[in-house]
Length: 354
DNA sequence: AATACGTGGCT
DNA sequence: TAGCCAAGTAT
Image (cartoon, rainbow, N blue to C red; front, side):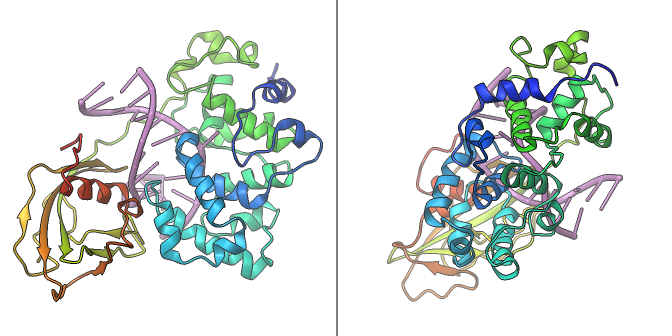
């Protein structure tokens, strides 16, 4: 492969244009040997999995304020961590966050391991996150491959094999370009590039430090790459949730099983969501009022239309399922978004998808 | 290897 | 606006 782009050119761009983030060390500090806190890098990288920087910021501040160190997080109540994660999505990440923090405390004396292999053996840390932590927090020369890197490589090398088939080839390209020195800054530089200039829809090639070396730009096909195999259409599933409020204001909620959709999160009792749902007994025997409208929500692999029923129940009411959560303790913000939407609908708040 | 797993923003 | 997309991992 001739005329490869130079990592030094990208690093020079990064030194001037690095985006500020609460978990980041500025390039000038990184150059002088100041390293980011592995705990904060790990936490941010897990939060950033399939999630935008903009969405992560507030959660990161909240988590590091509540739990400044991995020991603090490991000692936290599961329910508090799940509630703090509510709204961020992919809840297995929060469950694995707890498992990982406890493993770091129990097996590594509260000190994050620095090698890629050790990191990847921890819950919730895969090939991308292990390489990101090892390079960014520990200055190891690991090859970091995420969606940004794949897109940038596909364009630089005008590689038109569709994803995911192209993954091995794109990783090989990334390996060729990754420098031994400042690998962490380089990784963050490619990701910044992908998030700003080399964006998915309308890449802004003029200011890119690698334009001249970019084969896709030369061919005028940057915006067409990477190719992707078409996705399957999402089916629509239907369901019903039951919102019961006791006379004293307490709400009837249920903790969902650890496995599966919204696993480990609090939610309203209801039936199983499917294309052809079966009826289920309401969680309390009482007079239920079906609400007008419905909650519309789209998950990764299906659309959901959710009917909502509400009831007021007396103090002595005994639920068949779930537990009453005190009005003083309850916060709709501790619910996953789809459940919060149902609450909002019951409160008469306007739901744009209803 | 293919599928399950959230959400909000952008076009 | 309906679909696409984001710093992936687990199974």
